[in-house]
Length: 333
Image 1 (cartoon, rainbow, N blue to C red):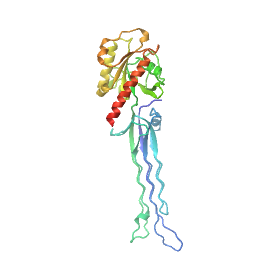
Image 2: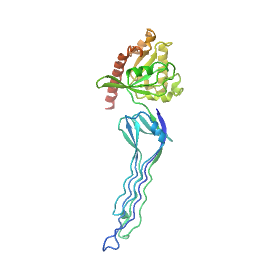
Image 3: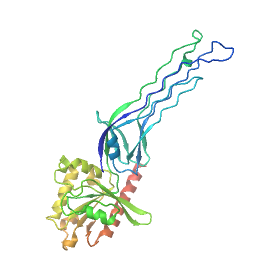
Image 4: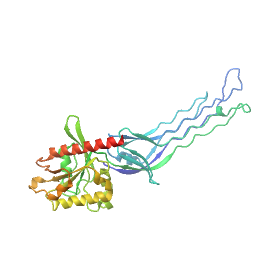
C-alpha cells in the first residue's frame, strides 16, 4: 500500500548509570574504587534506500525506540552502548519536526543517513570521584535521557521524468506500455490514486525512471482533489511530459490549464525541460494544434493501443532527463 506522509514518534536510548564498586584484592582489605561508566544510549538513525517506495510500514509502527545503554561494571568496565534504532525510508523522504515544521533532514540519495535523535550519555562511575581526601567515594552519576521527537515524514518521489495530465489522459496506459510499472487502467477518471514509478529501458545499461502522477484537476494548486499531495511528487523530476488527450476538447487549452496549475503550485516547475505527449491517436488522426509549435519543445503523437510514437517518446524523455541531469550535476560541482 502506498503512503507518502505520516507522523511518528522517535525516542533515543537512555545512557546507562555509572557504577559504584570497589576492588577486593587479597591482603588489601580497603581496595580503591573501580566503578565503570555507563554505556551510551542508542541513537535513532534514518537511512534512505532505493529498495523502499512508500512510508506505509513506518506509518503502521508509529513509535520507534532505541535501546538503553547498560550500567557500568566493576573493574572500571564501561557498560555496553545501546543498539541504535535504524529506520529505512525511501529515497526522497523529508523529515520535519511535527510541532515547529522545521526541516531536519532531506534524504535525496541512496544510503544517505542522519541521526535524528541522539542517545543519552552514560553516567560516571565512582572511580572518577576518587581524590586524596576521599579514597572510597560512593558517588556516581545517572545516565542522561535520550532525545525524543515527534516527526512528520513526507515523501517526494525521485524520478527522471514525470507524466503530468488530467484524469483519463492516458498516463497510466503510457507508463504500462513503456516501463515495468503496472498501474490500474480503466476508461474513467481518477483510476490512478497513487503515484507509480517505472523503469524505462532503451537498451543495455540505458534506462530512466518515469513517474505517473495521479490526474491533476483545475484548482489542484489550491489543494483541490488532493492536489498538493500529488503535485509535490514532480518537484524533483528532471523533466516533465505534459500528457494531453488528443481526442478531447481543445487539447491546447488542456495544456494551458496544466501549466497554470504548476505555476501556482511552484513557479520553478515551468523551468524544467519538457515535452508534450498527445495520446489516444488510435481514436483518430487528430491534427496538432499550431499553437503547440511556439512552446519550443518536442510534441509527440502517440497511441498506447497501437504503440505509435512510443519509441520516440522514450528517446526524447531519456535525452531530456539525461541532459537536465548533466546540467544539475555540473552546477552542484
